[in-house]
Length: 332
Ligand code: BDP
Image 1 (cartoon, helix red, strand yellow):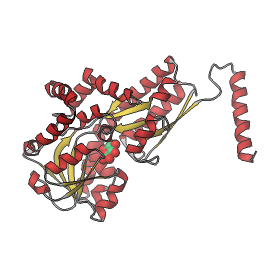
Image 2 (image 1 turned 90 degrees about the vertical axis):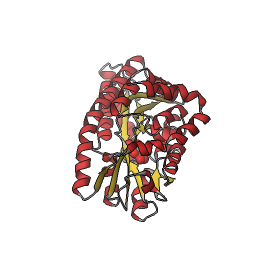
Image 3 (image 1 turned 90 degrees about the horizontal axis):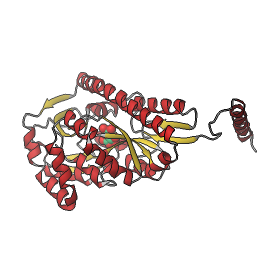
Image 4 (image 1 turned 135 degrees about the vertical axis):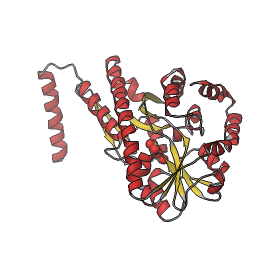
């Protein structure tokens, strides 16, 4: 036994003895959870994940020992989704964009212009329809405990303002990993390249791509704004994000601990949504102050008008999703 192992085993014995002496019901060995987060420390989602961890650890009296790793250090989002489904990671904040490849029902949330605005998205996700997405995730090994905001996504690029779809002709845009987004950009006349988030900055800088698309906070925190100086408000995607836990970790919890964990996730979402609203304004100001030109797009319907083939393609491959799409469109 080397000295570090020896010290660890002494510490464990001391913890067990301490627990026994105090007559605690807590098991001697905690469930160790590792959590994935793509955003840097201080980002609204990261602050919310930190809060979740603190609350879970303290309210379970150490029965759960969770740790969250920021900045995507545990890998790309598609990999992290797989790892969480397999319980190699126990919790994460996932955007539903890359989720569509694994949980097809969530693709409905990635259809361009499916939501008329953030309030529409909240009404849908907080109601019965939202529950259907949680059910679909649960079938694939993920329990959605609460929903975070992700604003709306718009196109940005290194060369010019985009006013109308024709301005995108022949330009190369990075999209998140989902063939729906490839279709979306192709139908607008651009060329789409699915790429990991962590690679986008370099790709913009070296001209491998001309642009990408995201909300203000991610455009800013990823530093893409340093290289892509044109942000055009198309608001083409409004995609919710979950705080998800692996089914394995969830099922290992007692009912009491499930309540604690769910409540911590709900509290985290409340914090995230509040900080999100503030950060959107701050990020917009920061990028504008740094010289990014932000343009309104007067005729968003022109962009929306190009999306019919995306919907048709999706619904012809997933005819069972028609009802879901229609019920979202009928919700106000
Ligand atoms: C951000 C999402 C994050 C995505 C990223 C992306 O919060 O989950 O990975 O966009 O574009 O807005 O990949």
